[in-house]
Length: 269
Ligand SMILES: [Zn+2]
Image 1 (cartoon, rainbow, N blue to C red):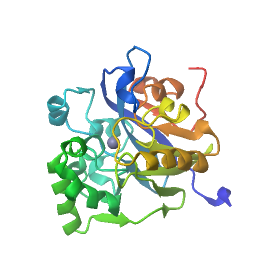
Image 2: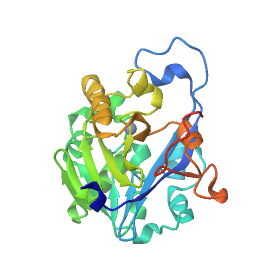
Image 3: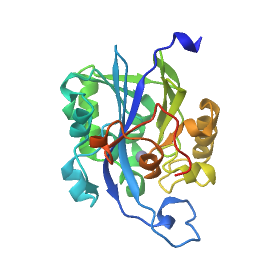
Image 4: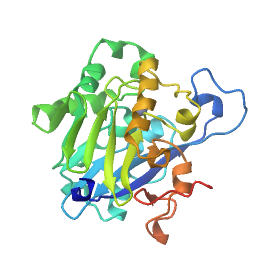
């Protein structure tokens, strides 16, 4: 059956980074001292027929406010891969944290695919707790509400096939309406985990990332990643610099900017 599915080309685009310590990335901290930087990505799935952008990163202004190192605009990153944001029809939002939604206004023709639980969470009483609201920008959330009034948000209540070869999987945990995306490629189904696991190590050591809404659902999210991936090497974490090392750049010019996820990773790296 899978032979009838389209095979998408799939890319991770790195647009920002920050320095951090190992203890910053695991609930309960980490016994080892040491640097563990975090990268920021968006993802792109393209076939001859369709283009899906998965998340859209933050802006230079928000990078400055939050003291992140901004490498390039996500919109420019897409352009380097031949995609004009003005023409994109479909943006999948894995969740509404500032680093995944901030450039929504730069896709004038797109519909945005989002779990309904996420907009409830981001507009409800939990946002009165700074520890939870800290990961959101109020202006982004207002913008998504406005897009909904303009019939440009498609809501999902649970898992769904968005298109042949593109499936959405609701998990919650890190954010109440978090979803991950499965993309059918030449190497089979690749799981774009987004923040279901920030780093390979969160999943591999079963220690969730510190930003948490529901820790139990974070563990269930790890299980869901494993259940939906043909092998662990088909799971792509949301913020791990190792992604740039394990996968090849699409061209020499794009080294350090983008990698192909539709080929097997070099796990020796
Ligand atoms: Zn997040």
